[in-house]
Length: 415
Image (cartoon, rainbow, N blue to C red):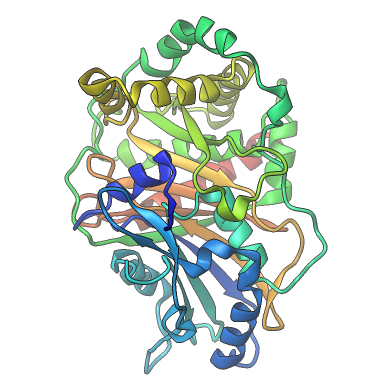
């Protein structure tokens, strides 16, 4: 008898369709060196799988899906992406994002990609979102992919279970939370489009240390995540203002609800969200950062993410009424795009003796949310991934280029 999927994991699994594959991707760029030995890579991954038991399980059943142990063919999970000539990385990861994971096997793969045009190699790690949210996916990298290191895992976004407010206090502030989170719908979103299974990706790099400096320079200290939101808002503004009047757009920001001390390898999805105004009408990039930082501080202070988590779990049993509220919260007027950020390795890490120089992440767009932005940090960089269905949102590179422009405006703006 298998272990039932949690309600959140099962809901995410049920979203999979011909258009939505359901997985996220972590992209690791390796320093130049001798080509990785595929068999040695497989051996190392196989030896470390004990640190992440879910990686040896598959999903069984549909009406009441369960996790069950599976025979693991390591060659089917750790593969070389065959290419006769040096490859263009964005095209490869676009193809991998569009390729469904095999439900008959554990829901992850690692593709060794290269050589790239500059002679480097990359690892494209895919994990189904039903198996791992952002925090859990980083635990997978730490446990299975990276060579062992001594740095402690990030505690960012992980809450202390002993610090929970009472359920009465959560419901007492619910009306205020609902007004703040769902009471200010945006304009018709330019990303409100049907999608196909095609995917295109582009990436931007922000220097992590400088992002901390920019945040610390503000009158009210802004976090790196605030800086990311300001860069994304600035990028969206720069792209959209070339195409017509600027709309009012909200961004959904996932918030981790993992508890300190829990086993992240089997915890599955433990997250909620807040919605913030991206302030695309604000032309001053530093002013946009201050406005966004004020919004996120208010939501943290009043624990909006936890309150919404309590609400939607309660509404799950409320039939059509609950479905209608959830449908509005997931709709394109409530938010135009999702912007996530997870802390990755805080020290230099390696795979098979090769240093990982850059880490990126990409999550899927969704119907009526045809642009998705996801970020992950390493010891030096904040890697930002833009993922679209190119039939709905062409020229994804424009968003990555505009993100670099927005970042430069913030950096120069503080002198």
